[in-house]
Length: 89
Image 1 (cartoon, rainbow, N blue to C red):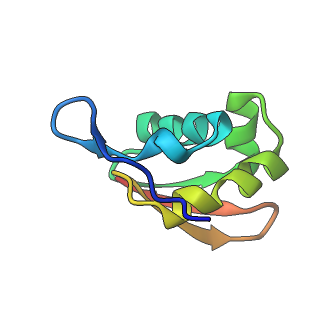
Image 2: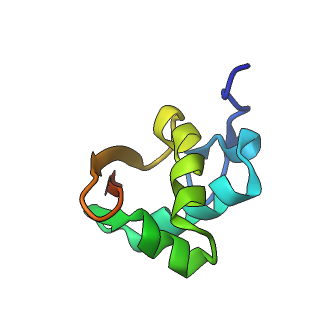
Image 3: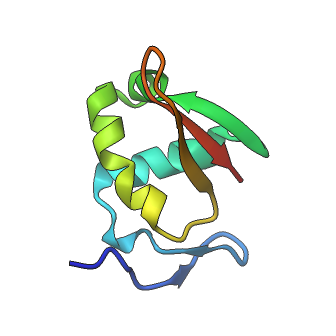
């Protein structure tokens, strides 16, 4: 099964491929877009608190965001006291 989605235009000229994402994945992606400056680090547990999810739900829903082509680049960065994600806009 492929995670490739149809590309559609959103705000301005930014292209988005979120149509194949689940609701939780879209919420996480939107959160990262709104809260990341040029480059930031986010802990799963802090994303989870802000989105009323568990850290495990955040981690489980990051794979399509890591593999997809979005306007943010996400990299699994660290594991000490929970997973940290490096996000570059």
